[in-house]
Image (cartoon, rainbow over all chains, first blue to last red; front, side, top):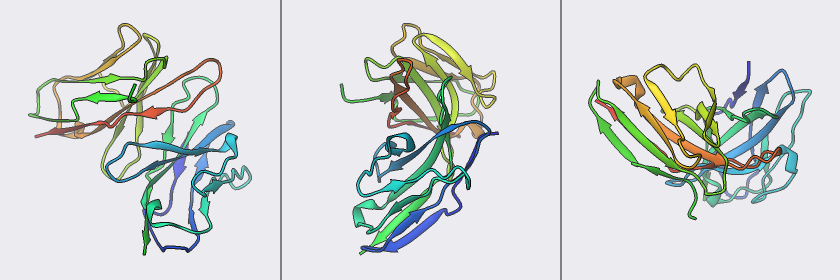
Length: 110
Length: 115
């Protein structure tokens, strides 16, 4: 079964501190992994996907197939990073439906 | 084109009533997805269309739920005989699929409250 686990419901850091949002997945095939973000009163939007290997807004995420993880990292958190973050996976080919984790609410304190 | 739109944004209904939601995808997108999100959970897949064909339905989608995309453009999701457990945010997303899959763009959602 496809499953995404985000162990932290809430994460609070101070501005300038490093931040890591954890994501582990369970999938028998070769998944594609994503991080979606939802800022206050805004719609869900894609932050980054593992195949593009980009750094977006200073965030990076590396797919670790051995540990089945796709943790999101940023070396210096900013107040504007405060948001809800969802890790998601999809199968390659077929419906490409997204399977989401429960989300982590990140708060960056001044 | 301002992105995916959904109507209404909020709906309050009494248990047993029928409700219908509409989603207008980004115009050139051929795939359209419906998800449901309850409090404290991530979005859960309900169903998706490629053009006008409904290609997959989740087991979450009971017989009371029906979705259509008659002309391959907008889509409707109808819930018959609503129950309190149907209270949730219903999200629509669209994407372009040309053999290679591109990003899913989400709408603002329709929040359903069943009293």
